[in-house]
Length: 220
Image 1: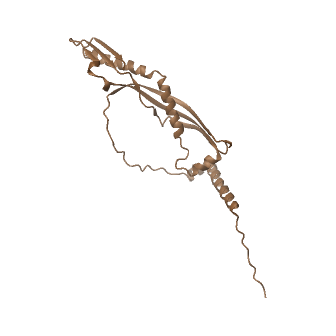
Image 2 (image 1 turned 90 degrees about the horizontal axis):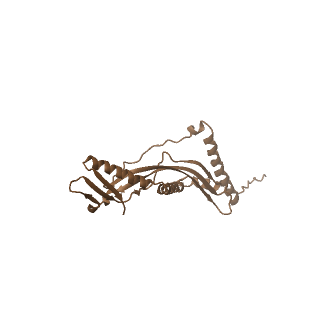
Image 3 (image 1 turned 60 degrees about the vertical axis):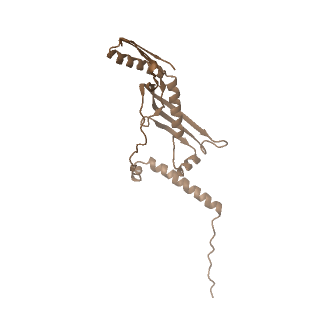
């Protein structure tokens, strides 16, 4: 009489499962990088982009009384680095080199001009205008002219991008670019240029209306 042979199955220990999962994630991660580097394969597994956005809704309308007298174009190179304590950059850390381009407008708020700020003589040949100082608008980042030059991320940061809702987000460098552009606009003399252009515009307008003497000043 023969005795049946029983097969004994050995279960994989927990640590081995964890190591296998990490290895699998790394294989998929680096395989994706290789696919993106090989010509032809990127188009084969490429994605199609469809814009399914709804129409823009008008929420409010504001009447503007300011005169945009000057506009400055600025460009800044942002070098943002984030390091982790006790870990090398290859494991945890990031560095982004970003070129930010944007504009800043300088304007004079004509809505703040009171009746006492405008003086006209009886013959309507002389006019004196006292206007508020020019101000800077908010910096506007130009998405078409702004771009990331390079991105360096540690292994843990790359793995985190796989589970992030906004992988490779550039909000931090964009905010820094806007801040630096705004600071540069304050030192550029843009408001002074706006006041000069406003004076030239008003003098030309009043001269065309028959005024011979036009004086424009700025102050609080």
